[in-house]
Length: 497
Image (cartoon, rainbow, N blue to C red; front, side, top):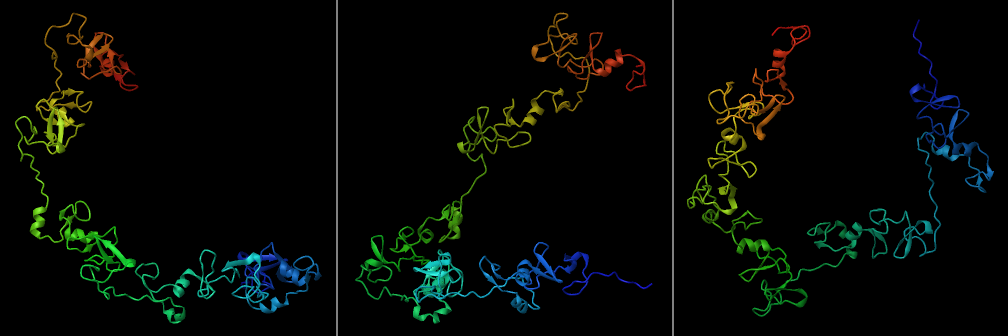
């Protein structure tokens, strides 16, 4: 059987098939999304504002215009007369897709001469007037005459030709010309090509005046050009009168004033920078910032001779015996001294004698050899040795021979304590700073260990044996605990130790 495609509904507007992804339903018919628009004003519609009439779609306004009642009371407002059938819209928009915004040219009633809008001559009502030069403009007429930019009361300029302009066009047409009057830059040149069209309205040109054309008697005129200086243009410097035009830096010709002018020894004026280069001090610290080098006018030999030199040798200045740095013997000055055990050290010498680590007042340890050490080196050299004194619970020993020996050594020499009053293990007196307590008595801290494996004990793993000794938990269970199946290290094992 030959393939027969499914029949899809046809769009009443264009006659083509309508698929589910783009269909719009109205009046029992299906339309394309772009065909779902008013038949008169071509406005796109949706389900809320569409009206169907004999297979044609209309918006509510056009439907009322074409098929609604006519006569008085049925126009745009009560009392109006509506006889519009929408034929003009159908003729104008035939075959043209628009958004339905039909704007008719606005007819403005002309006002008597001198009373209406200066731009269009129509009446200006209070709701739309914009004021300029005491005259009312329409809001849509209140634009720049040249660029048609919309203006407001903050940016409009009234021209001498009784028109209004924006600030940019006003400056181009009526502003001053020449150097210093261009755009945003104080040095720009203002000379627009439109000057040829506006020569009649051009601002008056300024001419360059030669200040030396009227010569003054010797010693009485301007020191720069020798001309007579009048009161309107004089600038005073060092009791002499200058033309404002001539009051510039001798080297860089920068315009000066009374704040930045410097009188040089050659009876001329300079800016501060040129004065410093020519007459100021030279060398390190006298350039643009502290630490910079000012080399203008100096030779290589003078520069190298003035370059600061730092001598790192602290022993170059010897101190009296017992008063200098304990490490190098040099004189210690206040700017570099470090204090330790009543002695003064150089900051460079204040380091560990073993590892040479730089120290400060928080890290330095004074050794019995009158040297200074860091904490780690001090503990290795002069700290206690044995179990419990390293990185706990490790062993610290700096000797070559191993120190892990568990021989019965007497920690003290001298008379033993009375029976029952001393350490149960060694018999010597136990002082408060080192005592450890158990059920059988008071022990030395170094004697407070397991009697079998010599493991150091504390109050959490101590077990008192029936023989008066102390044990760790493992050795106590091995010596005095139950024996047999079920009492070993794990359930079900056999312990006969």
